[in-house]
Image 1 (cartoon, helix red, strand yellow):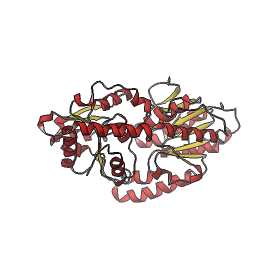
Image 2: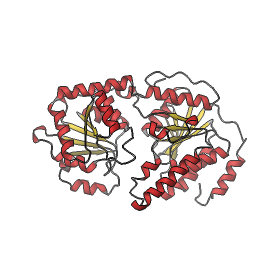
Image 3: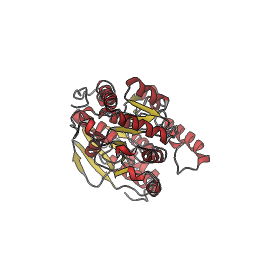
Image 4: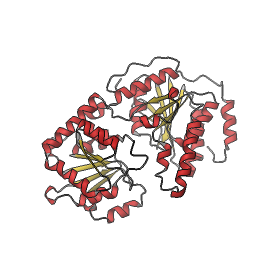
Length: 407
């Protein structure tokens, strides 16, 4: 793909392609320029579930090589340096790759690919938009947008998103709040709950009571996700535990690492960086407490963070932000404690209480695990996704999928 290709020429190519060839009846192409090829929602949950149900699945995503993993064929994109190149050159490249991969359905995962989705629709394709985040609220927390402009940009982007989905065949929404933004008639709720087998089949290296005193945070270490407060809270942990907070994931922005390492309390942080999925699960099972102390930004207060449910699936108690929605869930299940995410002392006290009361802490973890097994798991979400695909494929049935998300 050459950067000189213009949008009008791409549109002409899309129109010209209508009626050319017959797409394989059961092939599905997933598209992303933002997420990696091993993204948990896209690859581990949606693509794998579709492959297990008998569909031929192609994932076009940033990756270092073409390969097939667990029944999903990955077509690699070279990750663009800079947001501008990702939204132009990379978007054009993914469109061309999609046009050269005939399929029954094209399912894209990034708001910035809405123009690509519309071009595919112009070409006569069946197209699904997967809304992972509440776009308008998410923009309000974007540091790269000047604060005085965020409200304006948020309103414009949200309106464009709502209009752009109207010609598409369907919308998949990750939370009820996101689903409410789109027409009910074309929106399917597919929540980001854990795949049971990923956690139920794992055997921890140590029983809960014999583990090191470790509280884990999985995800990007950012200011808005409580990185500063977690470091300050780690500093306050009683010396009798020799305790650590473990960070599994990246740091955003990368230069924020220098500030983190200069903070008092960093000596109690075990930073392991990005890890393969199997290692992420191992680290969670090695911990005693799961941390999800995100700040009350518009994009977080009504979210359903994957890490919260994965901690529960691993049977460890959680320390979570006291947002009304999260507090209701945690208190209802009695699977952990909620705190003011801006208060390092409160975070430290909650973790210390769970360390000091291992019997009660384990009981909370087991109640969380039980709720994942019975309610908050990927099985029902996979069935919703498959029903949507059957509808888009004019009723062509897929193989039945078991309650835990396995074929």
